Length: 388
Ligand code: NAD
Ligand code: MG
Image (cartoon, rainbow, N blue to C red):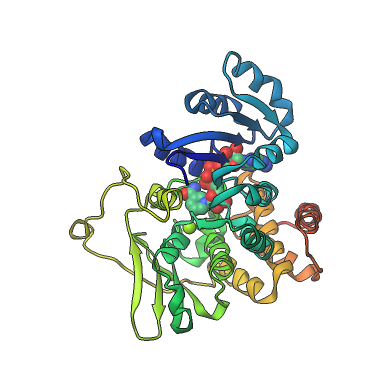
């Protein structure tokens, strides 16, 4: 690889996108920004384009094309829009693609970009959950290295000894437990959107913050870990660790357990993905264990947080169920955020959709995207018929 890394960021205006850009701005001579994308936040996208001198800026919402073009007047950045624009940007040769769109909306671009990049820094876990087999196979075919950005998977990636795979005991994913870790079951019926959006340790986009509160996020991560590291469900445990200092662990059969630790700041995991196989300095606060003093752990409560149980069951049952879990969750979270359903309604919707949908042979990305679209309609219809 050359010294200057060509980089494209899909989902540049989001939480992961912003942290990625902060790393780039801290080390500007190391990167050349090729493409940046956003869904609707056209002003922020244009601002980033002007600051990074990106070659392409893509706004997913086609109706904002002219606005983007106006905002970029006089700059060299080319404005693109819509699905075609996103796919065009994905097909530009770069060293690194950062996949940081939220939800299954990130699948097509992530998949399209694989043949055109050397490293895929993957934050968009929903793509792996739904289409892990297809993504990994394409990456293998093109020699593209997938580098996990999710902090747990980055941690595992950093301490997993591929040569000792046969002596692996377990992968252990840590979970903060979210804002309702200690909330009594009886109070779950009254959880407000505002409270659910207050994560104790991490600052993230709205969807993943709700996923952390329901533990659906840990469920998605359990599936993500199984696929990325090719480890069966019964060899992956989840432990609640409220301080979010240990980002995950790998236990070997000789009794040794290796962990990766750090302050809860996504820049560490993103930096590792961008600079792998090397490391790079960041301004992340160094870990001071004497100040932190205590690290605590407990088992997750699957009664109050059924989404984690449903994710494990989906993982065991196969790809169709994983897609149903993911899509039902995405739609349910949207409805919770706009006040149409309750907090506990989210896992009820996932459970009902899993019960009411049968398996389907899915082989291509198109099959998966079509199936996801059908599931979206089915979930929305279900929500209008039953009170959750
Ligand atoms: P976010 O909501 O802050 O940002 C999402 C980005 O995707 C934005 O740039 C938005 O414009 C774009 N986007 C949204 N919908 C789109 C669509 N339909 N088409 C095209 N672009 C679209 O989300 P985030 O918190 O940055 O999370 C991004 C991904 O990273 C998610 O998959 C999440 O699970 C994962 N992740 C996030 C964190 C974190 O700390 N935020 C940690 C680990 C993993
Ligand atoms: Mg995570």
